[in-house]
Amino acid sequence: MSFLSRLSVAFALGLAACSPGEPAKSAPAVQTGPDSGRREVALFAGGCFWSVEANFEAMPGVVSAVSGFAGGTVANPSYDQVVRGGTGHLEAVQVTYDPARISYRQLVDRFWRTIDPTDPTDPDGQFCDQGAPYVTAVFATPAQTPIARASRAAAVAVIGADRFTTPVRPAARFWPAEAYHQDFARLNPVRYGGYTRFCGREARLRAVWGR
Figure (cartoon, rainbow, N blue to C red):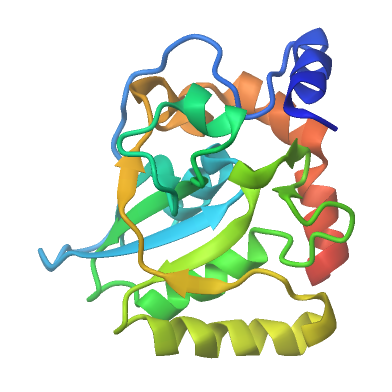
């Protein structure tokens, strides 16, 4: 389904797929337990950044998760530019975390279980969000790469190498998305809940991962 066709269907249901309604205000991620003050950063592309952001913000030890774009050639792209295509960017989320409370390996392990790395019907999308900006990837620094690859190998062992398409890619420049995309799931629970039901996200994750 093209972006315009998908958008038309979504608006007909009052649920623009990974497209904003009213602008949302920023809100801090929930955190529990002592904070060591240390900070490290990880970068993931898992389809619609609303869902990726929400999944990571729910993890203890994650300080913040910011929706944006990575992997392309256009500096400081807008959401409209990215979804129209041609920028090379993927919707991505930059995760800032306390390494004393959660490890990079734990983040990557969790990431696989929140996406469909097999993309059986659409190699250029994720769930109902179809097109090049919704391709999945782990963007890893040289230090992170062996950890990400080991995590990927463990995930591949669960669902099979012939079905696993999500790559580990070199680290890329991250560009934050517009303010109205940030913390969308938490600040717009009705619209986000409708979006996830429309996309069949949870049903597909259960089919892939058996959860």
